[in-house]
Image 1 (spheres, one colour):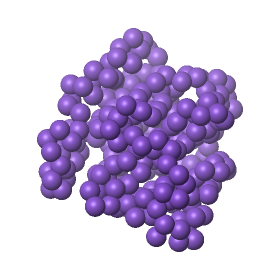
Image 2: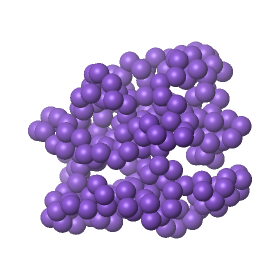
Image 3: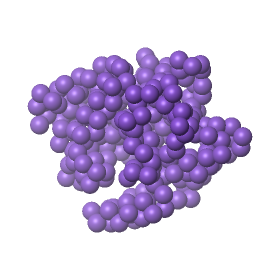
Amino acid sequence: MTADAFVHLPDLRDRVTQPAQSLLRLTPEMLAMWESRARAVGLPASWRLPDEAIEASRLALLGDHRSGDDLWIYSYGSLMWDPSFHFAEVRLADVEGYQRRFTLRIDLGRGSRDYPALMLSLEKQRGCCRGLAFRIAADAVHAESAILWRREMLRGGYAPAMVPMTTPQGPITALAFVSNTAHPGYVGELPFAETAAIIARGKGVLGTNREYLVQLATQLEALDIHDPYVAQLHASISAGVGA
């Protein structure tokens, strides 16, 4: 990260995990660790997309990206506190026509076969989603986007898309990982009580689903972002609903 990366959001500096400390910075070495964890819990060899498919997805979207251009990444979930890539700038960003929703069922990470979890995705819905946009400098786009793609596209649960959005400093177009409705783990927006119950019980090698929700709610509050859906889930689970 550059010295002035937090010029627009100075209070965020101490609320973001450094890439070197991130367990989600999927370098080849970190990916090997995840492979070992997947085998340890009995997942089949097909538990993730092949490297070739992940890279093909990246090139399909970024193949025409000009080598001298920076790349913006939109974050609405864990990328907001653990982006895992090096960036040169971060801004608040609003994207119209999308909302945060827990719509992806997982059995690794913060879920397991016995205690599956729900992960956050970006759903096409009326309204506006406020998150963060991180700018990767042009000379780092190839290396950092490859690492990011392994993280977000490891199991194919998301669909990468270039999405226009607004920031206080002006409009941008950013890469966003939105819902892949064709993925086997995609469950759509479940009834609220069912969503809360799954999040309350989900747990895996990375921790609990509840911890993820708390981290999300805490980061949104620190950024003065009000998301009624997240706030209601957080309040319900904190009160013991679904436990």
